[in-house]
Length: 126
Image (cartoon, rainbow, N blue to C red; front, side):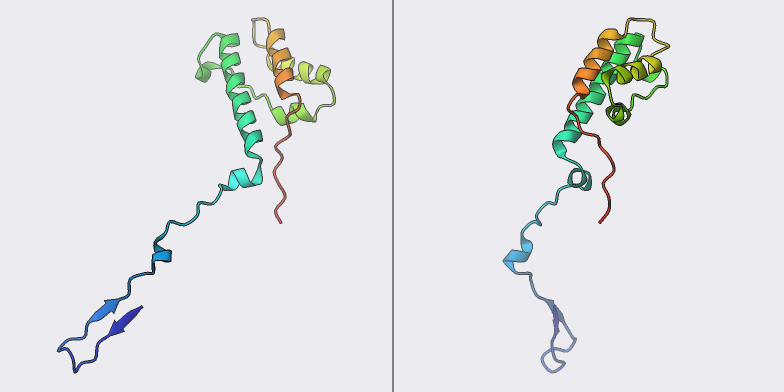
C-alpha cells in the first residue's frame, strides 16, 4: 500500500511503501505435486522400480545397450488386465520373439514382480 505526502510538506510528491507483516514473509507451504496427488506415491515408486528392472533385464537378454533394444513395449497395465498368469506369460513371450536368449526366467520373475500391483489408470476428473 502506498501513501503520497501532501505538496505542502515537500516540494515533490514522494511515495512510501509499507513493509509486509512478518507472517507474510514466511515461505508458503509446499503443495504435493499433481502426479503424486492423483496416484499413490508408493505405487509410482514400485512402477518406476519395475520399469528400471525391465530395462536392465532386456539389456542383458538382448546383449546390448538400452538404446539398441528392439522397439518393444511391455505394458504392465495390459498384463494386469489379463485374467491369468498363463495369458500374461504368453503375451510377454510374444513380445520377446526376437530374443535369442532364454526368456523363461525373465518372464517368471516379471510375473512375480507384477503380482499384487495396482493398475495405474487415469483418474476421473471431478
